Figure 1 (cartoon, rainbow, N blue to C red):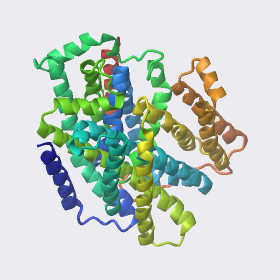
Figure 2: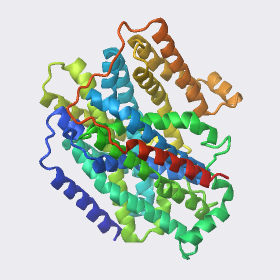
Figure 3: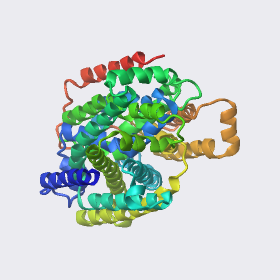
Figure 4: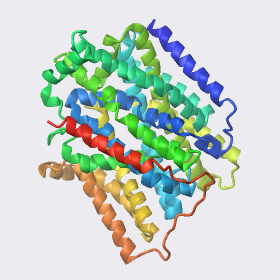
Length: 530
């Protein structure tokens, strides 16, 4: 029954996506990378949500909740504030420029050197960090969820993991190789419905189990009674996400992720209008408020159910699904999880190919290349990156919590790029050479703090949390850029030039909806403050 329901939902999602997008134009850069700038707000919201909600979230964040408690909900709840800022500040500016990638914006704002550096940073980070991690967490989740060791008879975990990674990688590569952004966005939306339903069902069954099948109310009371010290939204100092870091590193990582991360915001660049883009981003914010119900609650329940059994953090979620869901729902949810894996994998591959073809192929390798040649190069680059990710994913075995590892490594390139983008937007005379220096210097400084033992030891001795450290680096980069904008300003002040034919009229309700979302965030934190 598990296998049958898995195959049925997978076939349904694939068939419906083909039917809805079979006539799409994907031979031009705009058609392949931006869906012909035709995306409406439900598609944008669904695509944003599922691109984010892959297994590094479902498996990784629930694993962090299993290990550290409710305070890790910061990654979901604080994200809502970042989405409001994206809708009101960043998106109008990005859409006006008509860009396809964030490095393109840096080229328009600064110069081609800055664009090339940012482009290279994104490509390296996606190829060697993000995409392998998506495959790894997806494989870990599926192995425990459907008990692949028993199903396949493969006892050696590393071998089974590598085989599952290859299977997922090949499927995702084919999706990304032959479809454009709109195909991926529609598939995201279909799977997004299934993911939300399935994720909420896992939370329901987990609470019901905790309450001895007396209902979710009894389960919730059992959860609060069983681990009251872990049910606090205000993370203590020394925890993975102390409350003070919500205003430093956690805020900055969320702002980069939702406002300048190519893999995520490429969906918004394909909006049919600014109003549709803002509605899509804000709807995503509203849906993110539900995130703790399926990204944190199951991890908390797993801690209570499996206490003392020695289950690794990042296997807790899959084990919970396997043990609690009926067989037909396990197959359905496994199919949804595969869809989530493919969604994030495809989004990263599509974004990586856009960065390669527009940033390197058109600028360096073949500047005179036609649109058809550019898209063809992008599709073959997808194959290369996918194979590299399949080889690298199994090397991630052994991390404490994969989600914590992801956030730490992301900071290396998140922070310098976000600093340059923000200051570039706000200060019109910051010179291009300063932006290039800041990009490189930020990566070097954070890497030294992470990996050079004397520096890492000094930070530890000073009791400086890693998220506070990256905010210090961010502040230093901003001060440097502002200083250079004062002592060596550009000859002319930069102005945003409109280079987009879509309607750029803002949505009238954007500010009001944004304010309501921020108030809801504050209310959620207050409700669970211990």
